[in-house]
Amino acid sequence: MPITISPARVWRERIPRYRLVGKRCKKCGRIIYPPRPACPACGSRDLEDVELPRTGTVETYTIIYTVMDGFRDKAPLPIAVVRLDNGARVLAPLTDIDTEEIRTGIRVEAVLRRMKRDGEHGLIAYGIAFRPVLYEQRKQ
Ligand SMILES: [Zn+2]
Image (cartoon, rainbow, N blue to C red; front, side, top):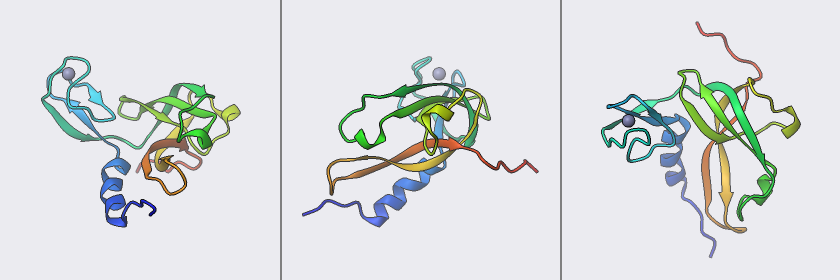
């Protein structure tokens, strides 16, 4: 029997991920994304939720040509360090872009993308990826 994710579960999982919620260390101020139980800089577990801006700039990137099982349809997979508009850096895949079009300095925005599927009827995992911003609205 195929395993499927119920719509309710997808909905529950979608909101926190799509809103790009990370953690802020209350001791040293480090922004942590994806969220972890402890600060990688100082080890503190005194963290609070912080909503991160969904737009930023590609600071550096690499293109992975050999990918794990379950990600094969993603190869080549570009992975970027994105400097968000609040200065926090996140590591995430790029999507909706040809690998030869990727440059440092391009503007990107977070979108929800299917990341992984185990087999034809397997579990589907969703996560944040960044795509180029084509028409960026000016801030009011
Ligand atoms: Zn810290």
